[in-house]
Image (tube, helix red, strand yellow):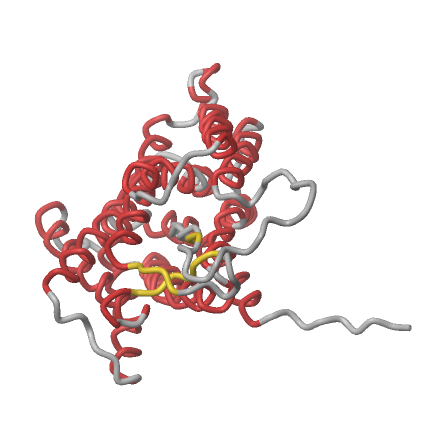
Length: 339
């Protein structure tokens, strides 16, 4: 008897595309730094990402938020999830390879867990999560090569990249607390499915968030840098692709995956992004890494998997009973942005 192969679900193709887009973002940032300042890259990236989303909102008959409270939350989210980390990665990649920046980005789930525990009442650190944090941050030290004075890499660049990951770690639980609510689980006792508050769709909120970030970076760039001195085609194309695909399209893909497969599945893209970033940097830019950097990456990803509950010991005995009707559902992990 032959068994027919099941075609991949639609979310799996989106998952792969999202990992490729986010992983390649670090390569595109590196190319952008050859002609533009980090603030200029961030401004161009967010403007290029916001425009197609705004067009999509108009074409689908959507609407941007009208509430000042929602705009305030989105502005704070844009600051920690877009404006500051995007700019920090630009500064970081003036000092370190794009592959190493992608590796540092893998620490995002670790920071997100720490700030989720501090900011969200339903987050409680169990033994596995505490162990995961310890393993993950030990991996950060291995990436730094602390026993050899940062292993020959630029410590300032790595600190800037980790600062970007730290911003993601702050912004992710903030966004969840401010704008996400729990829908009923698909199965009794299962994880709650995320829903957006205030009746707005994900594309509408993503467009508004990027629009808020674009306004922030317009002001910052006017003060810090002004207009670019030159517009070489390769750097301009890199920033445009980074914005349209690595920012605008990535938001749409992420929310579609959350809708079709759940937030926990969407969060696992974090483990593929550094692999793509390293492959792109080494194959296309000829970047080289020390042995400790990929070794530390393994520890960071292992720690992140433990903190997010992706790895857990198999329980023996009967399955726990389903939660009674009306009982509060377990929330899914909120996926973190990358790049």
